[in-house]
Image 1 (cartoon, rainbow, N blue to C red):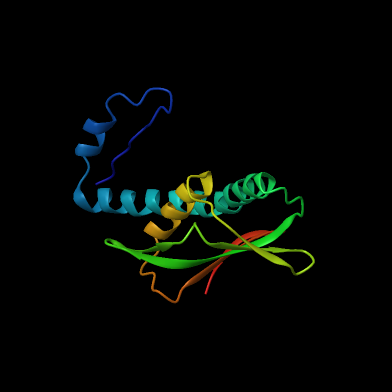
Image 2: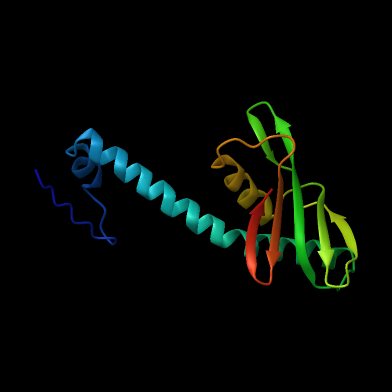
Length: 139
């Protein structure tokens, strides 16, 4: 059976009813596809969010060097491991480093989202966010 679902992005009234009419297999597949799309968008946006927050934090400390990358390690909370945004290591083009606290910044939210859709973070995981080219690399 083929089901056609047309969505008007300017008018999503009736979306709940249209989705409720779909069978479970289709809903599961839609969930997988939309979750994957959101993760890809968030992954692509992560370097820019981290860079903006790092620049703001460095400026508050009077540091004008341009960051090359930032490394995060994990910290354990009651509900699992997350990226520690309060002790991020910034590396500059000249190889020097400094530690910044990104708690309360846009990067904190982006890092929390990133950690929440990783399969299983552990206490030994590291995330390196680079800016040229923009990337988020886990090790």
